Length: 112
Image 1 (cartoon, one colour):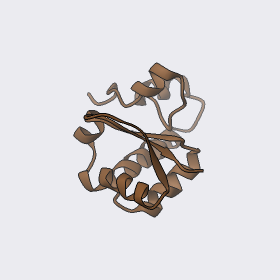
Image 2 (cartoon, one colour; image 1 turned 45 degrees about the horizontal axis):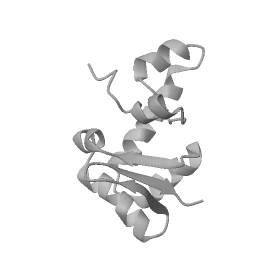
Image 3 (cartoon, one colour; image 1 turned 120 degrees about the vertical axis):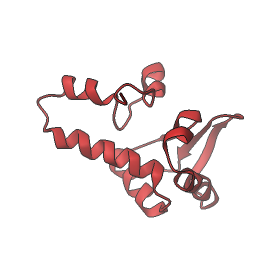
């Protein structure tokens, strides 16, 4: 059902790494790894987008070395508005910059 959504669309089309790809594909390809490793990554992605707490987002971004965050129609359909609004707060705090924006999508860049 929700295993093959397009959250990995940017990684698929650019080759840039992502915190986690398609759930079932990752479980098949990385079967040697304990399943909870993937579960932790999935939980962290949900927390990154859903939580309104900036410090939680910073921890996740640092832990995985995230450079870009994408917020488009897909993210708005699946994640909490307060969590997504946090990224604009992080821009105001100079923790992120807007690398790209159009009427439907914003790509944030993590300030190093």
